[in-house]
Amino acid sequence: MKILVILGATASGKSELALELAARTGGTRGEILSVDSMQVYRHMEIGTAKPTADERHRVRHHLIDLVEPNQEFTVARFVELADATIAEARRRGVPLIATGGTPLYYKALFEGMFEGPGASAEIRDRLRGLSNDELHARLTSVDPAAAARIHRNDIKRLIRALEVHELTGEPISSLQREWAEPTARHEAVWIGLDWEKEALNRRINARVKSMIETGWLDETRRLLDRFGTLSKTAGEATGYRELIDHLAGRSSLDDAIEQIKIATRQLARRQMKWFRRFRHVHWISGNGTLEEKVAAVMRLLNVDDSRSMSC
Image 1: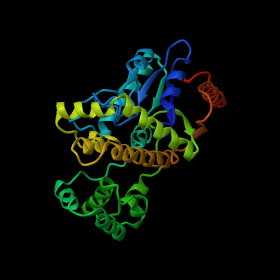
Image 2: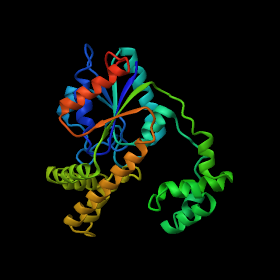
Image 3: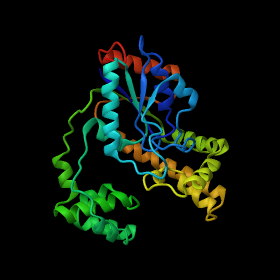
Image 4: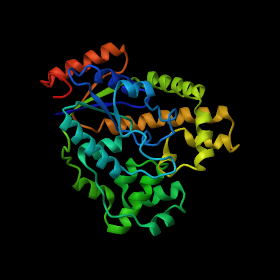
């Protein structure tokens, strides 16, 4: 039983499409496997664009609301839970649609992950004392291939690449090349929603505006009141840091909103850069009506000699 994967940048409409497709799987209604590193956190509803209670009533969702916002959540834990969900769905004969916005989770779930050596607290603490430019310059000197693809603002990946080099004496880019030929962990049909850049940017700006109007700032205030701070992984959710800065008096609300729009557009570009690396993705236009997109997916499934998404 193949999984149907719906890829797309944030605000691309992938969740809406996945919901509609889940309702059209034939005798057994499909279920959705969330592939999103932020929707695992409880109480972070608006800022993570989590499916509504009505949507979850219509279609069963998996791997949402797993931990509290002050707890850590890892890629390894996601894969463990996702593997169990997939096995259980197969046992029940239920079609699964995997959708969400975290490329690393897709990579780990469907192709496996390069793990490398374990973390070194001593090395990481020392490297955190360096500026972004210093980290990037140091990585350029020892691993120019990795430095070319890791942005100087991506501190987490810069530190990990330097850490791996210190621990192994080998560039992380070389170690990753040895592992680069992916092995399919789960069979899937891959669909991607493709948008023209400016059109997607307009959708992102409109969604940020709508999320603010829906109560995103109040949601953030409640999180701080209840938990004091977000965990390191939860704190990576786009937009919350900017709203926390506003609540702390470090920026105006207008400035925070503008920074969220910018950060979200940057996130979308990173997502698409990752998604383009996945092979065998059937890209369809994100523009058009929902019915047109459903029809396009159904035609592709027929091309794949599939009678339904549970093929």
